Image (tube, rainbow, N blue to C red; front, side, top):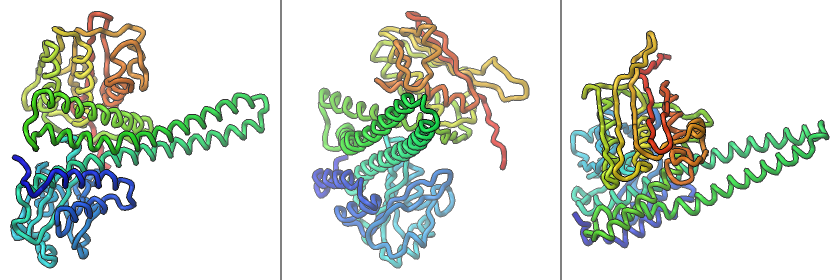
Length: 459
């Protein structure tokens, strides 16, 4: 379905550029809301972000006729009455959610909305990469027929742009915190070096060399952060956002060559985001401030989801790609669902990427024969390929972070060397273990065990 003629592509383009260019403003979220309000004639709008570790939706910024509205309401994303409005439902359904203030589901906020003349409300999820939901963008109008299908599509496009911008802002803020922490550590180290230099003259040369190394490292990190800020954030938002719009055929069908080129642009941008995310994950693991979010879920859903992601890649290389699932369909496991899927995606991606044409990749899931007395049973995940294989001397080093060996398994994407390091640490955080059997020219078998259940002690 195309966008109505009253919502011009140039307007969406202009709004997107304003959102990207406002990233360094003092009140970023308020600036985004003001841009959307002015360009689309919204009476009032606000951005709500999901609170980590809870169900509340935290207002981050707003614009328009608010008059204390946000301070008088409570919004969640659970199944309570406060979670049935446009904000909560857009997050839960991951789709735009339009409601009239007179609707029974809007009852918790009706009186405050009525005082301000709000009539219709639209909640649009802030989806990053089509999967991760960061929060919601909520729009209010005094007209009941204001949110036409064309306006909803336009606001959905803008919300997707906002999600990319917010995620990259959060990534950069995390990097800045990491650089600041490391810089402080380096400054402390330099102070200790100066003290040692005064006390032990014999170590003057060693301390001076260490000091220079620390200063170079500090400058390198500062330069890296500046480069990420300038070279990645602004163009990457536009690249991913507009290539996604074109791939979704919102402005007409593409011919085969155009679709192939734009798809390559989009996938390249996604790979770049993956590199940044891997760096953040690895840094969090080093600082020991990453934790797992356990839940009970149907294992087959995650296994088949990861398997289906790489089926097309296997088909392109005429690889025989098989899934052997030796558990019941309703079998449930207690684990971090996102981290488990990341583990499977890393290993399957490597297996497909480095298995030659007409090769074989077998992904099997079953109960493990490995047992520990008085502990839960283990589930065995095994991925066997007929790829290039790994030498014995390299197997002991392939899980080290930033290690690039002659084997292709030392990296998931070009030049980063973190894929298998993250896999190993995610498995160990679950209380599992990872093993590799490989021989050059004969392929590899990556096997990891995860406990069926976790112990979550009450505090």
